[in-house]
Image: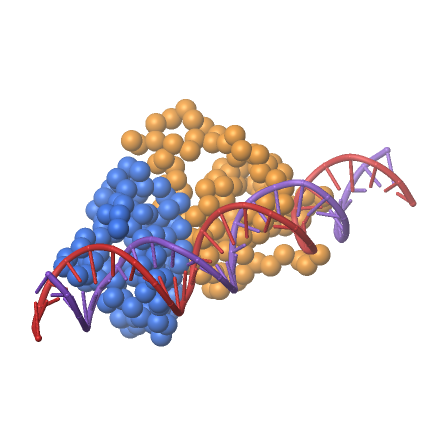
Length: 120
Length: 120
DNA sequence: TTCAATAGTTCTATTTTATCGAACTATGGG
DNA sequence: CCCATAGTTCGATAAAATAGAACTATTGAA
């Protein structure tokens, strides 16, 4: 099994990030990891909303996030832990990921905090 | 020929915008329109960089931008003029389009003005 | 050390989406 | 009416996403 490719931050392309996050599932995974902070396993996001995602699809989603430069995946024992590369990505593309996360949050995908009204 | 669908701004989804702009050609078209200001015809962006885009593909790109809520297309005589819906989109998703344009600009895709230094 | 369980990856077939040439439609002018 | 221009739609092919099934890696027993 090849050892998981992580692009250097200078090789990360905007289109890859946009493509990765143009899928609401993947955006939700990113937010999920962000909320944890400490490295999330694939299996712990097996369901997003009411939809159960097959693990082959999940694995692919993580791969796309990884190869877009958004996350780093490390094996810890039997499971894989995923960490955001936010600092690097923010240094390269200031405000990009934040604006995307805000955009998704302004819709009504109230996963954790549906108690406010953003912008209007 | 159906009269071109433009979504109401409140129906515009973040994933549609990200998907639309995850294609560098479409991002370049958007920037192109932005630089003009006054309504750009499809045919006037027939080539982006060194690549000539077939008009059926171009038409499709404009359609995707339009249905993502990013542009408005109006027929003026024999041609179609395309206008950004930036104010609306910015009101709904603050900073999103700007961050995306900046991200693309920080790479070296100098389509029309290669005479400057893009940050690093 | 062999076996089983867990966590993910890879393979493969199927579906979905994108691309682009060719044909078509719309508008304006001679 | 006919032609030119500008764009859309159609249709065939190519590329990408989805998800079930099989495989690999790691850990922890027996």
